[in-house]
Image 1 (tube, rainbow, N blue to C red):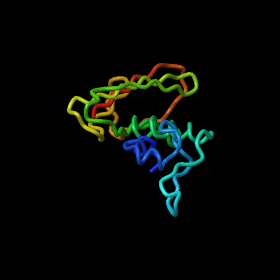
Image 2 (cartoon, helix red, strand yellow):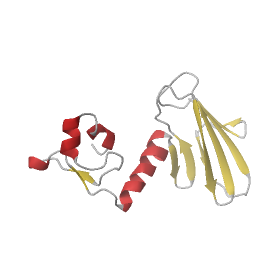
Image 3 (cartoon, rainbow, N blue to C red):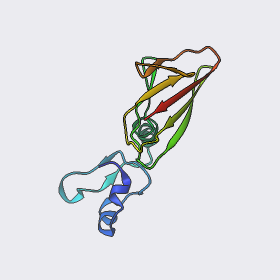
Length: 136
């Protein structure tokens, strides 16, 4: 409902939505003659929704209680992508490979060449570069 592109597919939808098709709105009205109309765009929460949608929900980078995990939900056509995440002075260089055209799920999680069974790691600030390789 808050994905602006979904309100831009037809001229009728655009005329009903009435806000920018590239900004996540704070709300979309659901009742009465304003149903389907977007509201409250260009507020600070809009940028945080884009961050959350892109980094967390699509690329799958999740930080929880100082643990890093990757849980992607990507198009099957994406063969790989990479992320650099900085924690203090430590750099986590993350490469996600998708050789079989999956949309989600992790088959293998490697940290500096060693497999991590838990598929998550504790973040440490040791001023080093950590290499993470994920295979979907």
